Image (cartoon, rainbow, N blue to C red):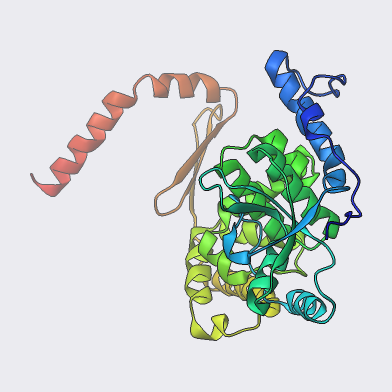
Length: 331
């Protein structure tokens, strides 16, 4: 039996029509303006997508996952609670699917992947609303539904943003999908572009880890030595055996301790110094030397004229230096 869904209604056809003025900050014309307006309208109306639509029951085996992944793990406590609730009371909220572009008998999930997974595990049909949507509309609906439910962690949202861009979506679509501004998108991409995918995968959803801690980890991993240490540490059996909730802090704290110990062990360079002053006291020369680096400072009234004279004779002076080395070595 068909029934109404508690969401408000969205007229997909009207979204692509140019009706509203461009929001400030978009220096665009023509088709670009239309695209941005459509994206903004979609973002504002996604919550209305399913009201009044017919809810059907589908065989989970006929459903494919979304073209863009948004979750790193779904085996946690929240998922188990969802599974138990559906087992006891049935599926109260339908998922959203769209017809497959490659097979008329199949559908692609827009949102509701966890409910689909539960249905598969329980061996029951899944309640769904079927709508014809394009990729942009699907991406925005998927992102905003997850944002409304507040069940995606920071890193999952960053992972989703990266996957959207990799699929060909624009940053306008990504921002609207996640309801974030340019600054937040930049931070998200900054994390997933520095932290290796393998490390993100093993850390999982990290539900309790927010933006600041991920940015801190990113900063640590900018050091090649720490990146190598992190990769090796997260591949150990002891680390993988940790419950997901403890992995991020374990890695973050380990890297901070390693950094402190490395700094303490690192020998400080011993600089040798040499001073010289001309007989007329019009030029002072100070040289500070380390193993492969020498800093020379000239001061007083003749500093600039002498430096110009010196720089104009560097080739001849260097050749003279090389000849003196040859003579000393007896070659």
